[in-house]
Length: 281
Image 1: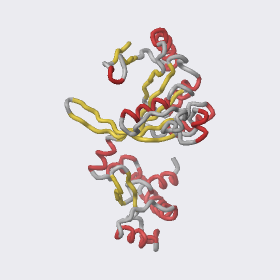
Image 2 (image 1 turned 180 degrees about the vertical axis):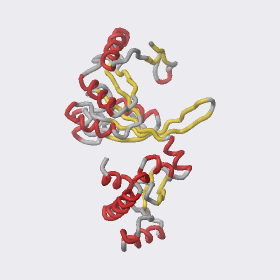
Image 3 (image 1 turned 90 degrees about the vertical axis):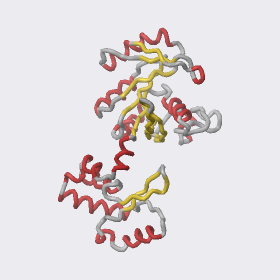
Image 4 (image 1 turned 90 degrees about the horizontal axis):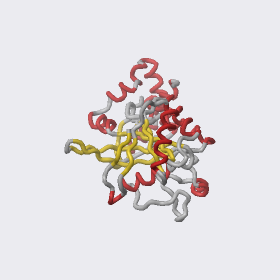
């Protein structure tokens, strides 16, 4: 990564910015600690915003000034811009918050049900109140398909990000995690969108169609994930005829992913009648 790209990234991070919270779900950054000589008269604008309790997003001019200051700091002490150094400069509350944040991508071959699966995740985590069709048959469309062309064609063209919260219960203790979901395109023409998303992921869900199995784009995306060392699980969707498909998928996955063993979990029942999972080794 070039030093200029690092500077732009850090200029928008908490490592070089004072933090003000407009609300619990969104953080905005003000660059109060940037050198006054770099900001010039614009420093008065920031101070005025602080007095009037107004929350500003960084303007391009301010970002440029801060980026220049960060470049000078990086030239003097490159170790100050490492991920470890930035995290260590955060307070305890922010470090704990980051520890419970996960960036999860959803990827697959086209028409495997990525956006449909994302819609269900958002519904069952309480982010949306109703489940809508991908092709917009109900005149609303899926939450992640914001473009008119996406709703018309029923495919994802651009990577879309949203979030949800999930409570982990272990040994009677609850811990809330914040999950950033990134729905990526499945069409081969938009592979670059998947490539961009993979750079920021902590993990991914590879969705496969139980009928079609492993397809060309599935293998392509798997190779991309290997390149960026993204840990992933396979989720088999569309269980229309799961009994004969299971052995076929197991064989294809083992061959395509070069894995000696695959673990499958098949749900028993659904929604109110859900009664656990059956695992196949």
